[in-house]
Length: 93
Length: 485
Image: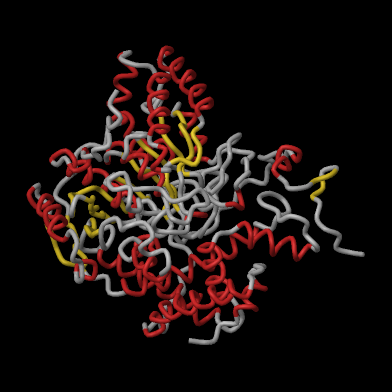
């Protein structure tokens, strides 16, 4: 098994784990990946990857308006909004 | 009123005036409250349910009722229901009120069904024991010290304890079938794409499929008949036309047509110790009604769990990236920066198992590992599907165990994720292949229910449901229920 850089993975996944949480996550992940690595022994040469169980072309629909957006309704569940905008901490000083 | 009556029996009583939908709904709401110790429900919506029941009674009086009008049911809390909280058993969505109904909910509402409440589940449907819920574990009605299975554990426990006649569920790697087996109820995961995923909170989009847990194959068919079919809001929902299913509400499931050729996959029976004699009895039953039995091989079965935890993890890590604390869901207190907002909202909002799956998926998709893990798993997925397609050249249906054992004690596997993942060994392969599969109660081992799994070719729900109904006409395992009543 390749090494697992847990701090790097946490950054990619946008998760902030404490040092002890990272240690526990690493231990779990090492066991999970070791179990997963059993698949490496299976021969898959020349086998096409299967991304979707029912392989068919994506359907297209007529290019007509079928939905309306009720912004106020959809924003009711937002943590913070003002004038129809979502509020987040200041990004540009 | 009989809490363990079928949908058809309740529908007949509603029509002959023995009781109204309001009375029936109140009866089940009261039962849900009396059995609150099972923790099967995240919320019981008495007000909404009684309003729907009144509307159902008006339809019954007006003669515009369907086969489901006035029938109380529960929805797994992964289905969006407008106006009530849809939490997915996560702190992340603890206060989330969906702005729309899932297609499954919308179609059942249109049929006049009455939603009693939202069923407990593993957080974001990730789990095999229902111990990963923000709202605490669900208890198995057969033994409150044991798990109900997962992730649709609340749906399974609610049906088993007679708190509703039927409940919706979702199945990504076994989340309808395994809890059905553990709780002694019937459950169907339809063909991938049979039921719209619109409004079903996404876990792994190429695997997730909605279905039902209920008292019998007949009740499952009836519920499915009202939900299945194309949906312009889900482009992966199939346009497959099924005249048989469309006619189920009127004609019932019907009799099994001709003797089926039934395959027994040797890889599923090789190391099975618990319940093998019960499965032999089910196979014997089918033989006695003119079916033939034949051993088949699904040689890539052992690759299913590794491939699944890569594919499902990869899709989950992508799907769950939407939870960023900005547009909806949980937001951390006093974020210092946008990054801090993302990271702390996600870390505080997700539970341990969800984080494990996200990290597994992130690992599999990260630079340098993509081919060795993600693409490798997809190649194995094709081999697993090919195993089934080859078997279905000589058999019409596969008969197998649903789970390797009976419901295990609460807390037994919570500290060992890999051992927990092994619980899904017999359900994951059909999920990867997108096949319809059903679990039916077939007996007891040391007082705990055992399930038999029937797996069919794509869109062969008719075969499974007719076979299941034939079995249930001659046996009574599906009518057993826990003593607690």
